[in-house]
Image 1 (tube, rainbow, N blue to C red):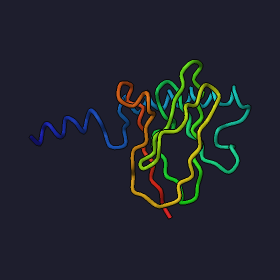
Image 2 (cartoon, helix red, strand yellow):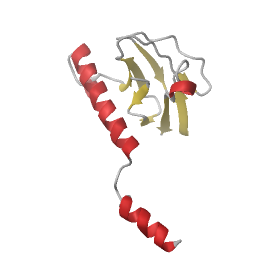
Image 3 (tube, rainbow, N blue to C red):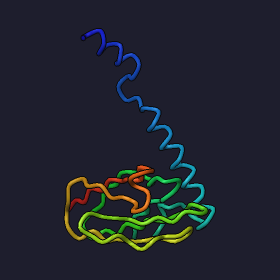
Image 4 (cartoon, one colour):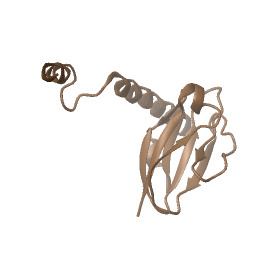
Length: 134
């Protein structure tokens, strides 16, 4: 067993990312480019809100940490697909069509919880994670 663990360590050294992480990073870079193309500024510059981009059946970034009282804006930068957001304990949002967004303000602290796109979470795996801190 020890040689098997050593072999894994050689294939995946500490700090290395898996192919899925690299693919997600590339996808999110593409999503950010599309955001800038549509809105003329980086998503990080959105005033007073935390932006999560919905693109190619993914949330970018996939995992976020926000403070109590912070608003998250999910922005759809796809060309033809609508998305929604379901946050635990809340009804599903309206659909956000291309270049539209939905927002939610987190009012209580919560450990890491999944949120998802109503029409795309099961077949497409469009699931994100949010942690709300004080």
